Image 1: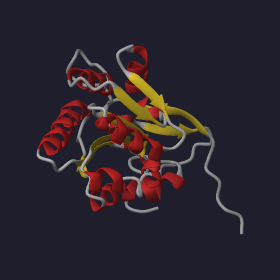
Image 2: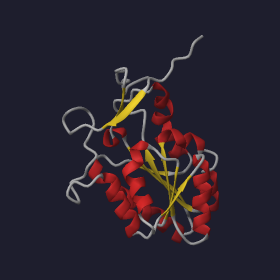
Image 3: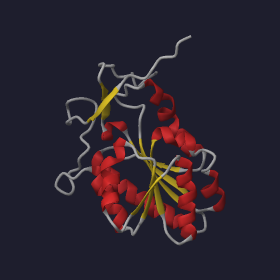
Length: 216
């Protein structure tokens, strides 16, 4: 039996509000700054200097700002689970780290999330979602739709901003949450899931239609 192949991918398509189900990925705050820029400013405002990532196009504006700032250590990973170990290590050195990834990478950190849970170490995840609005790659759907429940089952506090302008405040809330838990000796992880409606959908050169959100 021949397995279906994912369609060839072109650029990520960011649509204006009202032109589809997707929201604009720019915020009203900061004169229309991209939500990634706002998250970066929030990160620096909290004194966070370590960001570990398996790079993803949906996180590109945020990651580019991190890379351009000499005060931020942007560490490129070979697999997402390394980021959890790195975040635990930076906390042992007295600093909070952010682990940034695409939702498909959450499947790679399931076992490793036991480390911050059991050892009560604060860990912050920034996740760009796939398998949601106007997804055209069928392979992204199963894990993308399971991510919120999988993380919650592992004791991770899940935050889902509704719009682009909500992303940075939600991120700030998650930072405060994990630090407060650490002060109380509870520790643990929190995740900010940036939906595909906010990020924008990837378009494909063969005109592959969107997969219905109600099923694969």
